[in-house]
Image 1 (cartoon, rainbow, N blue to C red):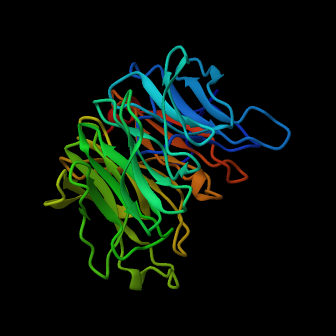
Image 2 (tube, rainbow, N blue to C red):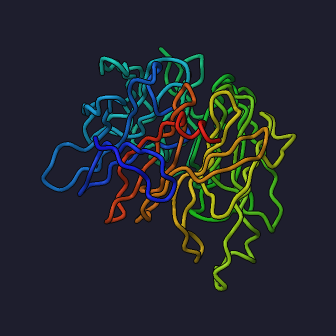
Length: 353
């Protein structure tokens, strides 16, 4: 671990890893910290000839790093309320991890021959849900209740991804039609009991919706609305506005909570008073990449950390808050574009907010 002063913002940043491999934080659609905020978790890329790939735990204060899984585990994600993480071994065996001791417990199996298409997610009841590519090549949503067999609750010809069960309602699973770009209708919600699916945010032709995340209490979702597709080719070097929309649980009401140029991945603090997002070069426009903090009540926003330029989507900054809401964890691409995990203590930001 090293500390450095950001040359643009002046704030102190801690960096916990270095290359040559990618060390990327967990995706922003799950908790990234243990229940007491002592540890955060990240994924280490496994290079040829090495055996240190997989999920790692970092001590926030000391920088001590501990390997939790090897490269045969996928989809690691942490629980919203319990001190547990969940992961798949050999594609289908689901394990729960104690985030402090690292002890793992086998809790069930997903359908044979398939693979998850994102990370695992959990409701407060313990129900696990994920998007899944079945052995027959049909995409599905799958749930796994403690002590029961996994169950397919929805199937589709579309590539399903970004599945997130509502943290406080095990009957609702949010998911998307993955196109690796714009979609005619990206966001969907599945009612587990009835099996019915419906659009969450109903898109118009000129809208580009992306990167959605539940609030920790399941009351809201934040998502990014990019500029209309006809104006985002970057041919004139125009910066693009990322508008963070926040909608209620049922998708009946949406409002613009914040906006700024070149935003991409939004995240809500647990108290829902703050938003953060990464600023990224995309769609033909180059900018100084970094992390932006936004206050919902006032609309105030501030670039709080700058980063290197991402080499791949896996190297995106994907910022998210710790559980107390006084720290942001983000990936900072190094000189080769590979993600390296960093934190910024928000108490220093609040002094001159």
